[in-house]
Image 1: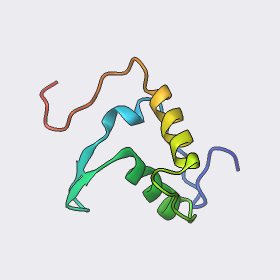
Image 2: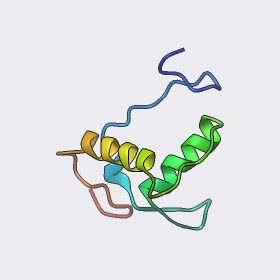
Image 3: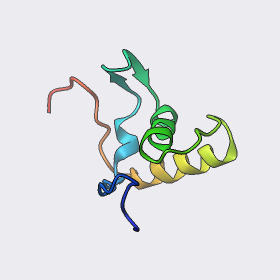
Length: 81
C-alpha cells in the first residue's frame, strides 16, 4: 500500500522534519542527526539496510527532506515557544 509502513501504520508527513534535527534522543542517550534518523527509519520501520551516511542515496534523501523544510521554523528542543 502506498503511504503505509510494513506494519500498516500511516507514514507521517515529512514536511518540516529536517528542521527538528539535530536533536537529543533520550532513548539513545545522545544527539542524533538527520542522517542517523533516516537510517533508523530505514532499519526499524522499513526493515531495510541502513545507508552510508555520506553516500549518494543518503545525500539525496537528506537533500529532499531539507527541501521539504524550506521556510519552516527550526524547532529547538527546550526552547520556549
